[in-house]
Image 1 (cartoon, rainbow, N blue to C red):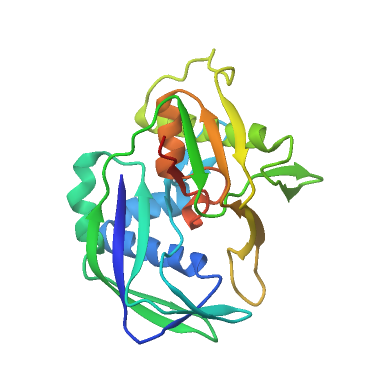
Image 2 (image 1 turned 90 degrees about the vertical axis):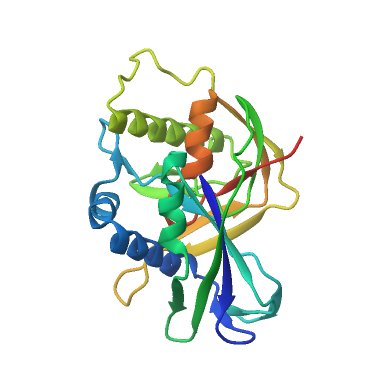
Length: 264
């Protein structure tokens, strides 16, 4: 399910760092922990896992949506009185009231050494169910991170790279398997990716984004993703659902791989 949070900045023309996704993810974990410590501990320490040991959280979120004001080398100014932010969870509709109560009237403080801004969640809006099929056109609204290991290190791939689709689909299959594992459902040993396909449709507006997902004097991980590109995903609808609600690509729980269905 997806929910749009309508946020009210507590100062006029607030300023925010470009790299706000990581502290926003930390805030999200904190809210979940206050409401359900067992679930939060499960997400943080274990997550949904595959037999091979890979682990996933199965939620993601959009970039903030607002009117841009002044821009700085390390941050920007928000010129609109409200900010919209969508969070996406791979959960059943029965959890709708729980999620709404989780966020209503919460305060979000995002800060580092140079910026400090607080928002109030004024309203939580449940979005209509996404309509998609086994062949769906999507747009990467937030940066999508896809990588291949070279000498033990991640090499981040552009959507135009010949191996981008393979690694994107391999990761999606792993996420789907982790859902089946958590539900206790049998994994068909004959399951394979013969019915899965990625097709890049439009990269003319694509932008690259580098983001630090861990901040600190002695620990920082800089990753690279791409957004604003359209693509077509072919897969069984239950697999596409996992990617749409839980995020596509790597680091989804830090706000990467949030995609929208392209109308028509």
